[in-house]
Image 1 (tube, rainbow, N blue to C red):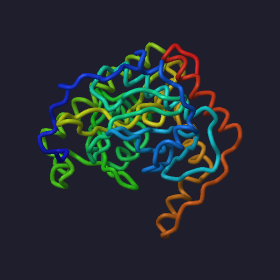
Image 2 (cartoon, helix red, strand yellow):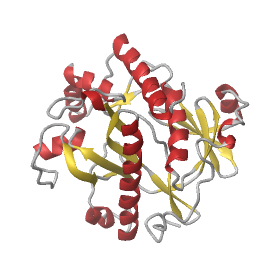
Image 3 (tube, rainbow, N blue to C red):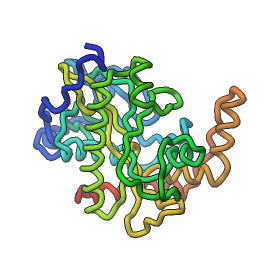
Length: 311
């Protein structure tokens, strides 16, 4: 069945396995290297490698690779892959929504059901930050805000979806339907599910002393139902320590925004844009060791504070 046509019956499926069930933790007999030999690589992304595990299953391998502004870097972030994999397991179980998650099979690998992915990236935003702030400053957000400071809390969370492309572009309900990405009913279901999940995750993060500024999710169709797909972790959300949150300035980050902020400060973000505009491929600079160390430590700290488990 094509996503976007009669696929908006979200909520009828039940989670196959929570992140805390025994199936997710009791059967971890294989190392990632053994799993790699056993399965065929079907896709290699900026961070994840995807393998065909047979029987309608895929295996996600979470690497320590890092990217920002659609540029890959040579440096690895120690323990990042494990943090992403275990965070995904935690959130798929904690949220209690239909998903493709089956179980974690190693520190950096998990099995998921193969989905027919819906070609929309579903973004929930609770704060005026990142590309939303840039668009609002340029008069292109479509919002009338009393407080337009950087990192200001929005009156209510908003659904801000984009296309899935090399460089994602914002879409509205009207444009998504016109482009044939989804039908109206599916768009409405995606909006409802995304904002609901963001609300739950924000509450969990708040109890751990964090502000979850925004969240990117992907959904797919499984047996005629819309379910949560891809992954859920610090590469999919912005996380700020609540104690130091202050509108009007760049926020302290516990996600890969640390790298984005450094790239912007050093002028690399602008250089990337100029090199692309000239038809070239942006050159990745070397990431300073202190940025690598900070990212690694904060990924681990965020995981431990939110889940209550050591990484």
